[in-house]
Length: 140
Image (cartoon, rainbow, N blue to C red; front, side, top):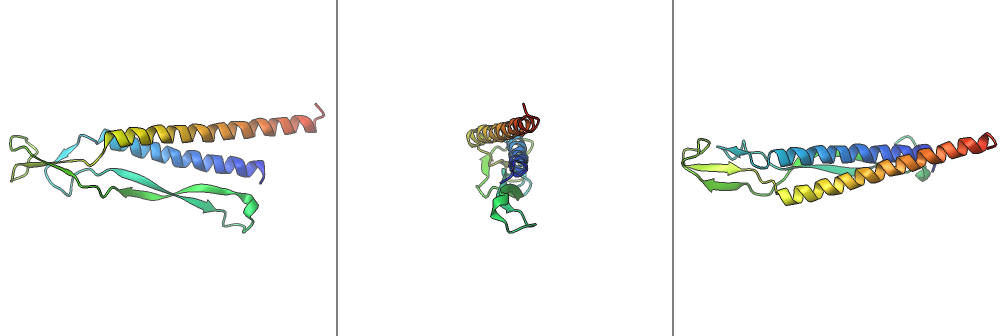
């Protein structure tokens, strides 16, 4: 595998973790949102990743990057609360709260942050190897 492929794989990993961080931030921002209808209530969202084989060649030495296939909504049930005095309550006095679990989202954010940091370190190490190889080629 060439060093260029390592950089490509690392960059796809950073892009995927960036999507994961943004999705998690959106979930946390909407964790306390309230709605008057079940359909309009914010639901937690999560990205779906897949290994992306290089379609240009069947050569396995090229390596595998990460591809974001999409973002799906959580199927976890919403929180329903009886609050007839709330201005957002429906005709039966119920409000609907998001299904975001703050503790899970914070753990996911820490995991995504560490994965992003690891990909940055891989790219930085690869860049230092490139630089060293060029110095060797110059006879230094």
